[in-house]
Image 1: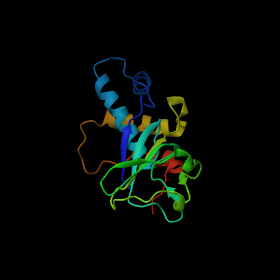
Image 2: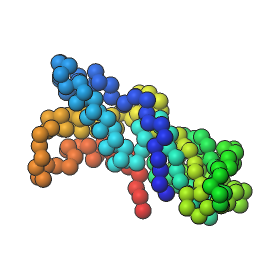
Image 3: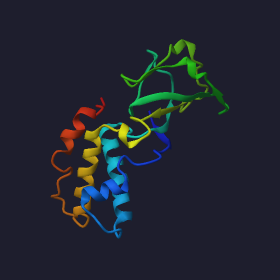
Image 4: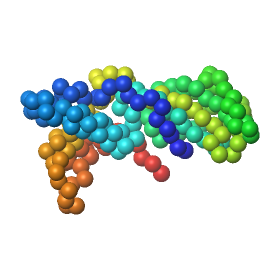
Amino acid sequence: MPAILLVPPSAEPLSLAEAKAFLRVEHDADDAVIAALVAAARGHVEALTRRALLLQSWRVLLDAWPRDGRLSLRIGPLRAVLAARTFDAAGMPHAIDGQSFVVNAAANVIASPCWALPAPGRSIAGIELDIACGFGATPADVPEPLRQAMRMLLAHWYDNRGVVSSNAAPLPMGVAALLAPYRERSL
């Protein structure tokens, strides 16, 4: 089930000032580098945990409705179904009422009786669901262990910008332990 980012987060979980304070950088010469590393650290944490840190919108593409009526998403934490549509054989979209779905945020599942939903007319990507996910809209909504993992990655990458050795550790010590409780496993 492919997913496409529609609306990225409006901010980063760490501000430039927070990042510079953690790195003990007092000059402005590296601001662009630090901002890029913060964004990269967020992306890395999101990829490893399969969780959006700050509120963002995604489009999930399906070929058919799940037979059991339960769609388990690969990205979370799920907040809401924003829009849903099926496509007919001619490729024309047909909106589905969002009230047809039950969002189980705790289980990261969208549920609806599959018999109550219109079947798509095309066999590939015949269903689109636009969803909102993330811990919240502000950096304070992001769990502190995830923000700390970002800080540790940021410091590691900032201090080792020129390292290209294949012997380099993939993650700084402690990052995996901070991320472990938030990781969504895939089967």
